[in-house]
Length: 102
Image 1 (spheres, rainbow, N blue to C red):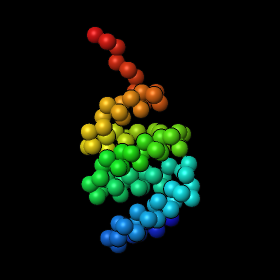
Image 2 (cartoon, rainbow, N blue to C red):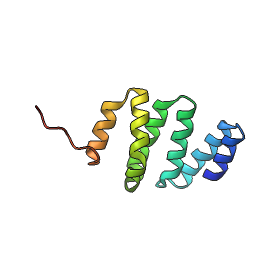
Image 3 (tube, helix red, strand yellow):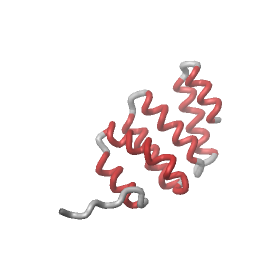
Image 4 (tube, rainbow, N blue to C red):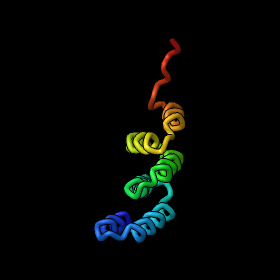
């Protein structure tokens, strides 16, 4: 389904790509790739807030894939004004160490 969605994006049919990716998320809820691809599509359409939310959901459903998602999640968080929430999430996953108080 992800490959089909990529083909739909290439064919300038993002709505069909989104439908395929949502189907992939439903079919394989713990697989990280559908959510990563969906977030990328959403961000390319200017919806960085929804892209960020999609990856937050992916953090919960695919914790082993956090290393794959940390970079895009950070980018979408910055673009959508969610940096503090992203920092908290990454700290909870031990990807960012809290800075000591001065």
